[in-house]
Amino acid sequence: MEIKLIERDSIRVAHVLSTDAPIKTRQDALDVMMGHGHGNLTGIAVEEACLHPDFFQLKTGLAGELLQMFVNYRQKIAIIGNFSKYTSSSLRDFIVESNRGKQVFFVSCIDEAIRYLSHS
Image (tube, rainbow, N blue to C red; front, side):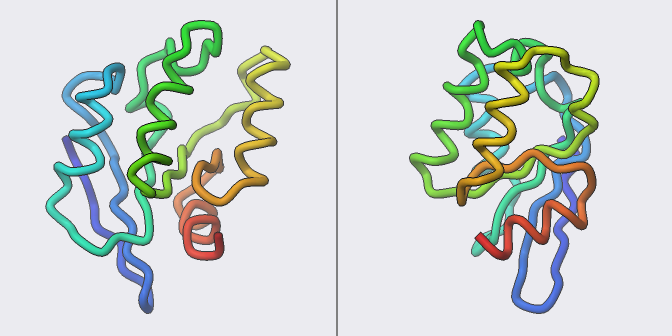
């Protein structure tokens, strides 16, 4: 797993740039949350390519299962990517609702991720 620590002022974000295999299981999500080696994080930013394609098929339940773990551990997460390619209206609605919350965000770039993670 390739993770870059980004520090700006008092903001600390672990940016997951790549993984050995796509994140698909609860253990994979725990590895992302706990395996970065950095404490006192503002949040974690994960590139879309690091997630298994099933994550973006809401009917699989994978997104709900993995994101609920981040919520339960009170760890903010931003998923970085271009989500316009997904045609599911349910997924689009899920993204909009997530971005209205305070813990899970879908964004287009790392700067936007840092902004969402630091202000929510």
